[in-house]
Image 1 (cartoon, rainbow, N blue to C red):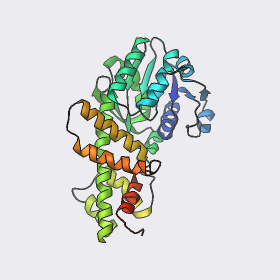
Image 2 (cartoon, rainbow, N blue to C red):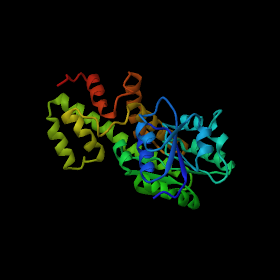
Image 3 (cartoon, rainbow, N blue to C red):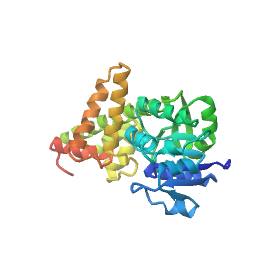
Image 4 (cartoon, rainbow, N blue to C red):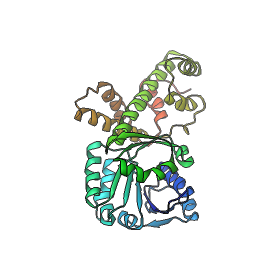
Length: 299
């Protein structure tokens, strides 16, 4: 149920569109930044949403602003550029940053927003665009208690599970930890599948053995439709985004002086794929890329 606040969205991409739809479905009036990277917005407009020309306009027109963009450079551009969010923010407004970001950038952005008298929480997500459309993402929140309380009704509109990670930036840290585990798992699975293909092992049987044994994982279950039916719909996360997130994790681990040899190796696999033109492809297609390097003949 809406509490009457006006909500703005910056980033109506695959995840942002679903979040906006879920907030609108909860009864909130929304507006969004007009941008060529947006998904189709006719359904949002039909529900009463208005497109605005700048992030500053979004901030002026909204009590709460969601940022749903790719990474730290995009967030900083939204916040600090001419016509950016800071120009329209004022006392009491709330920014909910759902991007995947470097923690040091998060602290810089949060400090600038708080200096304007506004509130900031980092609230990155897991799950897929399908769950975003259904209001069932998982959200990891870095926030002070009062700011979390202000955001909670809106988080309830988009999320099935809400996890408190700690203070500001810990939500983004948690997201990088999650993606390190998940995306490294995807590289491990890719290499295992290619090795199985090269040796003539039946892939459906391999999938069954993994899923009923110690190799089971959410990543396996999302990759299986591609292995068995050439269907990427369960795992549309791009190789380019995977490369970016793994790089962020390696940077975070280095700053914390934590060994990250496994992460660095997985990251380099994504770097190689992106450098050879695979960036726009979904992560399951890493299997084709590594298979080509291994001279696996297409089935």
